[in-house]
Image 1 (cartoon, rainbow, N blue to C red):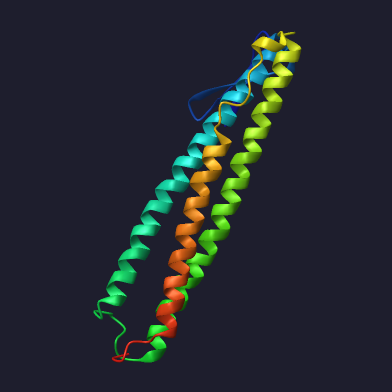
Image 2: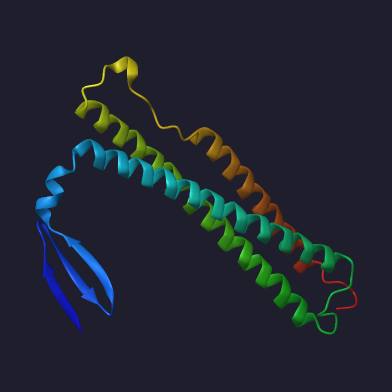
Length: 176
């Protein structure tokens, strides 16, 4: 059971022994446009950094797993050495995984470039709101050229893995 306690410009509720404070819009009057823009800039930077780190953590794991599977397949110690259909299933699964990874890499790159454009827009809004002279205005601190290069290398590596699996599916080992 929750009970409501009225306070100055907010409401406090007690629910299951915990006090929860709810602020009304009258408290929002103290928030300035500058602070909202700065908060959005900070959150955008945090999301970009988190997205970049999470993607490349996943990419590193995936690439190592994929390369290990290729090494295992090329060394003829394949777990599916009994039938040709199992070999095709293994190669097809990794080919599909590589194709999906290429698409997801492009999507993450587009997201990061879009967020970089948003940062430029927020910096421009903040500078115009604060009436900052042109000499002091900043661009996005995100190196989009470098990000594009890194993601391009990632896509090329994934395409190489896809091609290797395609060659493997065409050249079924004699034991399979």
